[in-house]
Amino acid sequence: MEITNVVSKGLNSYYDSLSVLGNRPQSDVDKLLVLSFLEEVLTEEMRFLITEKDYRTIEKALNCLYGNCLVPFPQYQGSPLFGTITDGGIVGPRITEDSNIRFTEDDVTRFRS
Figure 1 (cartoon, rainbow, N blue to C red):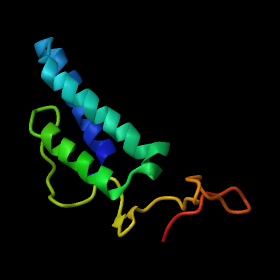
Figure 2 (tube, rainbow, N blue to C red; figure 1 turned 90 degrees about the vertical axis):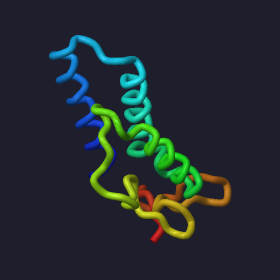
Figure 3 (tube, one colour; figure 1 turned 45 degrees about the vertical axis):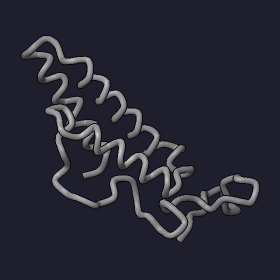
Figure 4 (tube, rainbow, N blue to C red; figure 1 turned 60 degrees about the vertical axis):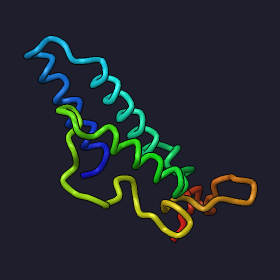
């Protein structure tokens, strides 16, 4: 299960519980907001700048968010949510010495292999 599916299921649970209960504890809402933010960082352009250290920090934060009815624990352990980790970090684009993303002659982003 990737993080986008986790966020989607969490939002669905949130709205389902609102229709029944009419309210949710603010701590549950805050956890869902943080999860949504992390999903956006990990799936948009920022994902290319995440290092292995950042990945581990995000993984620890996600472990703190899991465990309530909005964000249940995943059914797997140790499986990467955001991509494949290599020795240099998560597989992402090639970057120049000036920290610019490298492109091919056809303006296609070059990725590490």
